[in-house]
Length: 359
Image 1: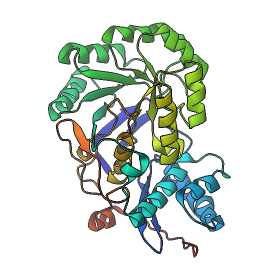
Image 2 (image 1 turned 135 degrees about the vertical axis):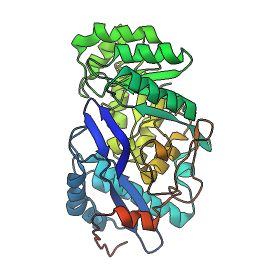
Image 3 (image 1 turned 180 degrees about the vertical axis):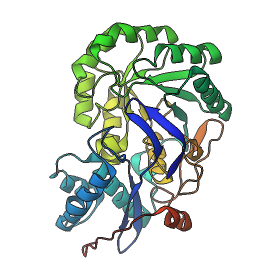
């Protein structure tokens, strides 16, 4: 699926979204999940074709081991295979969607949602010029987005943030995302961001450096948020225990699915730590599940739950739209949306069915 405009981060530039969907069909219902892995292993070690292979060869066949299939049993069974959280999340979501559709239960109510709409933020990629950045940020603010996130990297950090603050004022909710682009040696440089009253700085250091983040958090007034470092509820608890962050970004694909995402939410809420929902350029399938998650009580900051037209001229589902800065939580059973058949057929490059008698 082509993106409306190139999206550049410190990992590289995306111009299209190579989408892998998982559809689970049972005797009672069917469900959809979206794998958020990118085409190349730059954000993490997973990539789309690799995720398809591990699903085909290991994860889907593991369903045959279930004597009483449900999503919790599936999640436990997949733990025998190391890694591949994005592939696991796609299968878990599709299975959960089918299970909830059969029960007539929405995903938001299953997870414990407390609101019927969530505040929407938007992520702004690295631009070729300050003028280009200011034009795009202005457009998003005019559209009604409640929070702006700027991607940063060495050489594109202080001046872009300064320019946005000077143009749009101190009232704009503003945060930055480094995607692991810095080292602890850059701490004094990053301290300059303290002048701009940011909501947070997201994942400034490599994901393994929890102690480095704890040291940086001591040196900066700007709250440190972890993204790539957060891979499970256990890692989250460890990060909080050493003061590596005071905000957490939850991306279900990164942590292996929505069951683990809810556990991370619960750990953070119990410790008084704010969470928000990150994004991976999802279509409406992945976005619907993310919006349901973002309706839980611990999600007190606007997430990357932008409208469909932020990235796609035409989404694969009925589009999510921005309404006074908010996106509506789907009410229907399961994730509450499904692909529009004609649109799905038009962009599908391959389909593979794997039969499982037990389902």
